[in-house]
Length: 115
Image (cartoon, rainbow, N blue to C red; front, side, top):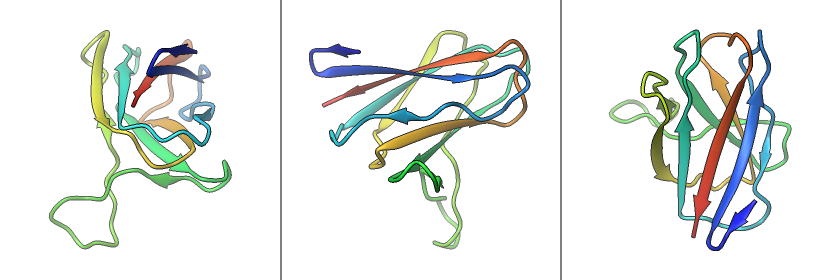
C-alpha cells in the first residue's frame, strides 16, 4: 500500500514457523526502512534477510569489528511492544524475516519504506 512517499508492506509468519513470507518491494530504491517490532509469545528476535531473485537470501548487515567474511543480522528485539526499528533500507528487492524461535499463533510484521 502506498501513502505518498511511504510504502507499507506486511509479511506473515505462521504459527509453529520461524520464517516469514517474502516482501517484494519491486525495483524502487528506498532510503529508510521502519520495521514494526511486534510482540510474540516466544519473545524472539527478528532477523532481516534480503534477496535479488527470491531464491537465495543473505543476511542484510555486515558484522562490526570482525573479519569481513562474517555477517551479523539486524535483529529487532520484540520486547518493545508496538515499537519501531528504523534503519537504512536494504538494497535487495525481496526481504524475509526470520525469528530466533518458532512463533505461536502467527505473527504479522509491518514494514514501511520511504524515499
